[in-house]
Structure formats: structure tokens, C-alpha cells
Amino acid sequence: MSETIRVERPEAHVGRVVIANPPSNALGDGPRPQLIAALRAFDADTEIRAIVLTGAGRLFCAGDDIREVAARGPRMAASLAEFQTLYDLVERVRPPVIAAVNGPAFGGGLELALACDLRIAAASAQFSASSVNMGLMASAQRLPRLIGEARAKAMLLTGQPVDAAAALSAGLVMAVHDDDALQGAALDLARHIASRAPLSVETIKRTIRGDVRADDVAALVASADHREAFTAFLEKRPPRFNRR
Image (cartoon, rainbow, N blue to C red; front, side, top):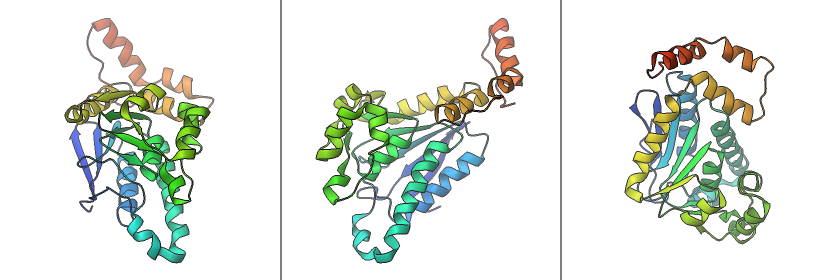
């Protein structure tokens, strides 16, 4: 895996993917398929129960690589389709994905954060639906679902950035941390999610997405992890879940 996409396992059951493509952590034609491959690998690894997605340095992601766009020609349609594959994959991977937004998230970078299950931000983070500035459209579905139509239109139609405090107030992020504390807070959150019953976590994520199955609750009731939760409660100890 190229160093433009760093794949890490900071501790048991937690994966971390770092976009490290300075200066803007753009997802051009090289890093984008590498990010897709990294997410698919974590999806297939049932030992991974939560994923942190973040950027290197002081910027989360600026979306596409503008330097490449003009030279793509007929390859542009394939690049846009691959972006959609990436966003849909983030939504659909088995483990929850936490966006640790360590700096500006603009255009396709904002859409990447929106596709994640949870978002926390550094105090210096900014969020901009900047595609309108480039004669394009992105985030016109995910952003209104998350923060409501009126707030979303203010971002989508102007392309102007909002800071971390405004993002928190709007519900775009669930928490704001000092810049130096963000990665630790993301790991704490991932660790907590990873300590919950994995089958339950995965079923909740899938159900919220709209993939409802008639036997979901019955399967959870019959699971060994459900029995372990009751046993641990009675024995007054932390449960030891095994995804069974």
C-alpha cells in the first residue's frame, strides 16, 4: 500500500486509515483506489470492529486532485464513478467508520466525511460544500439528510465554509476537540464501539442504512454474544464478545 494511504492497526479490533497526500490530501487517481482497497480489506477482516478515517497533517481532505482534472479528458466519467463507489463503500462497510476531521474538509472531502457513520472535528476544522464553486454538485443528498434542508442549502448554494463550532451546532459533527486531542478522542470512540457486541453494532448500522431483515432480532437473541452480555452482567464483569 502506498504511503499516500496509510493503513494502521493502533490496537485490537480498531483500524485506522490516514490520507497522506500533501499538500491537500486530495484523492486523485492514485490514492482513491488505494483508499477503496484499504476499506475493503478492513471490511473483510472480522477482527476489525471500528475504523477511524482521518488525514495527515492539518488537513482532512480536499476531494479530487484539481491538478489532474484538466488532463483526464474522457477518463473523467470513470473518476467520478469511482468517487461514488468510494462514498457508497464507506456507508456500507461492515464496521462503523469514524471521520476524525483534523482540518479543512472541502468538496469531495466533505462528502467523504458525510458518508462516515460518525464525525468528530478538530477546533481548526472547516467544512465546505465547495463543488458549486467548480461548476459541479456534491453532498446535495447526504448533507440535507444530516443537518436539514435550510442549513444544507446555505452551504450548498454558497460554497462558503463553516467552522467547527458551527458544524457542531448544526449536527454535522458530534464533538469538537482541541487539535492535538483529536486523534486520541477518535481512538477512544473507536475503542468504545469495538467493545460493544459486534453483531449488534453491525446490525444497527445496516438497519439504519435501510437494509432491514426479518430475522435480525431473532438472530441477535440467539447469539452467543447476547448470552455473554447477560452472564457478564450477572457476574459483574466486562463482557467478552466474540462476534458469534
